[in-house]
Image (cartoon, rainbow, N blue to C red):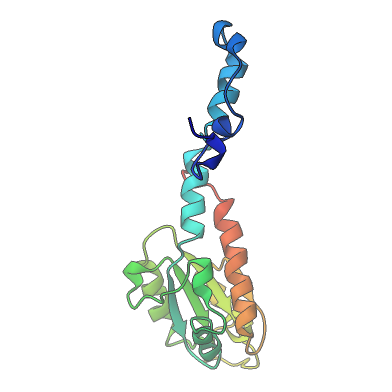
Length: 188
């Protein structure tokens, strides 16, 4: 007979080795039975936590680049920053395929209805990252033609500050969004 430690696909129960003959005769208590099941590799969790984990690690962004922040947003998809490590690698071309909108840059009054229409076309659950001070608060453009904060048009989940924010800051914002998604209530 081969040694169970030679098998690379062994469970904790196999790694412990053969049981003594005395344990085979004695009936197992409920606690021992549960412990034995855990040693075999069964994991207990809730459906909600599995769904939230899957959603957090498979975010599909929709880039809504309006100004200089869009260049920094595009940089995260390149090999230097590689946002695909976090499950958000492919920017979708259609709002019906995306669940994250990254608003990068200043939003004009004429662009606001378009932004809202695209947001409404996204399937639930959907999230929004406001990237840059122009999208978050109007930036240096304090006039009638620029929206003074994209949160007046769509609900924003994460704000990324800066003018323009570096790609590392946007990646940090995506990580913060992943934390929020992991801890959110899936089934309301």
